[in-house]
Image (cartoon, rainbow, N blue to C red; front, side, top):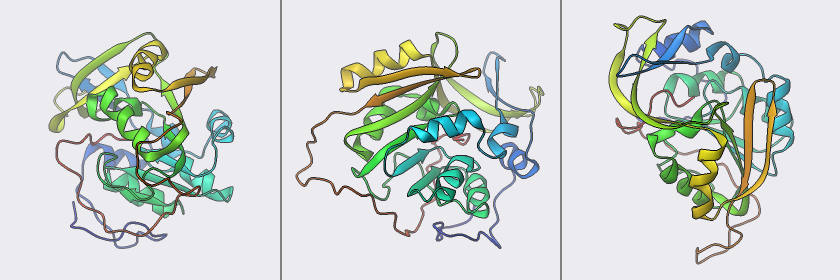
Length: 259
């Protein structure tokens, strides 16, 4: 990966990144691509849908967003691109440099950074998105939910996509092309899979309250409200400001399939 550079931009021309299965799949716009556990179990990654334009289910989710929107694990950027086309203030963040470059190429604002690193507008976002398996980021749902709460306004909205089955799993995984078990690249990284009930079990003790639950197509969603009060010394502004910042190379221990 390249060294620090400006990534809040509209033109990623001349940008380069190290080849890896995820980056290759984004460039091709298709898989097959999987997360593989140590026991050989495979979780398919829906690269074709991620690289396409926002579909009807995506648009229904975006209709529920309030104010400014932070898409955590934005992948190739279909959601922030759709929000930008609607004239909404939005920002995607992703640890994949290739995903951020793809998003910028579509005209969507994106930042090459882990959600656990400093981000623009902390404590001032109205809505955060954790779609496309991104509840798995970091492999620790409690830590992720705490971090998202820090990013939102008090009483802010989180819209999360849950697994369509009742599952609560944490595992170390690798990215593989196809079903080739020899095709794993790079070190294993922690990931999690949560069904709706598992998400609620983690969220409620942290002060989140359920706003809604629904299914559309074969996908399941939950919207949560963060605590309505904040421990911050200064009340957050009502509008998050996206500023151009220098990106740091994401930490090696962060997930690389943050899409």
